[in-house]
Image 1: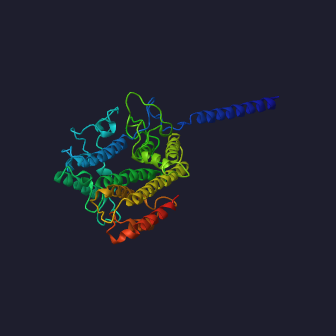
Image 2: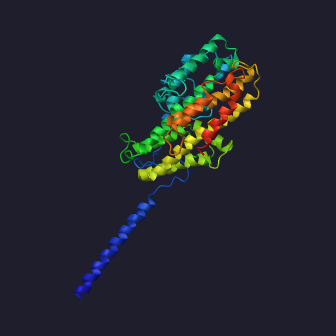
Image 3: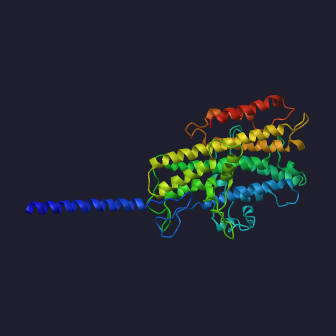
Amino acid sequence: MKINNKLLYLLSFVLMFSIGCEDDEAAAEAEVYDPAGEYVFPSRLVDGASSVSYTGQVVRNMLHSDLKTLTDLADDPGHPYLTYDLMMKYYDHQDEADMMPSYVSSGTACEAVYTNIATGKNLSGKCNSDELRGWPGVNADAAVQLWMQGIADNYAADNNAGVANMTSPEGLNYSQMINKTLYGAVAYDQAFGYLSNYDDSMPDNVDPKSEGGSYTVAEHKWDEAFGYFGARRDFLTAGDVGDCVDLTSEHNFGWAEYARKRDENPGYSFSFREDIFNHFVAGRAIIHNEGTVDELAPHVAMIRTRFEQLCAANVIHYVGSVKTAMESLTSASVASSSESESYNKYWSEMRGFIISLQYNVGEVAGGLTSAQLDDIVSHVGTAPVYPGDTAYADYEGELDHVVEILSTLF
């Protein structure tokens, strides 16, 4: 009888222990957070707060967009304030009190002033310092400042010159060269840089990044990479906004817009929007749920692959535009000819995205190699080619070769 009682007691203890374990496991499973396809993550550290933060990237995206709006004004005579110093206020932003509201806001943004979103942010401080391939001794920072000076000098000399004010003697469209180069030298380069934090180990994902903060270092670095992609947080299922647009969560910037455009024209066998955005969301969910870098690895790899392919797809797209614009050139066409305007514009967009490709070349598994990029640069050169140039007869073939190289990435 004593033996049976002892046996019953032991069995009861084992049963209670196993039930308790099952309850703990069930509770743990219940705590796994599912963002339901949106980049929305509550804080694990502060009740009722969000753990998502990339306001610095939003301000840089705004400055990048606004700088393009400003440089494009060079073809209109009504902007006497268009100077090098003003352009530098957008590129090397120092929280100046006299800055105009952001052009991005268009009167509909909740916060149209940069410093109301984040302070101490600019483009110059995040610009990659590597030499531009094709321009020995010149990096993106130096090139951007040189091109801004070119616009300012042209505008000061004759503000009625139209598009010529943003065109170099060689045919570079300064505005497009500035804009597309910065897509690579800032956003593309920075996004890859932040993703590299997860290559070997997980950054601190326990303590707040700062005292009393609502997010960890691991959460924030991933957010910063996402911020440079520029997508609104409900990118794939965009809903209505309130009385004003929250630029930190309800607006698509730069690369996200190009993902949309390339999905529509020309379109590929996959979706840039879905693959980049969904893998950013899935990766952030892993971090939120305290997963591992091994779990993150396939998401990091997919983002890198699709991001490089997106940049390559932009080059391919603009190669097509360049070839179409060449049909309007005549034997007498030169850089300053009116019929060369579209050709110069598309060529500069193409060349700017080729510059962008250099910042993470060789870092994507199965992606573009450094030798391939050098080959591309040798085929396109550093300025448009015109009918009077000896190289013009073969130039379409050179552009076709660029497409052949980049098509191997898909």
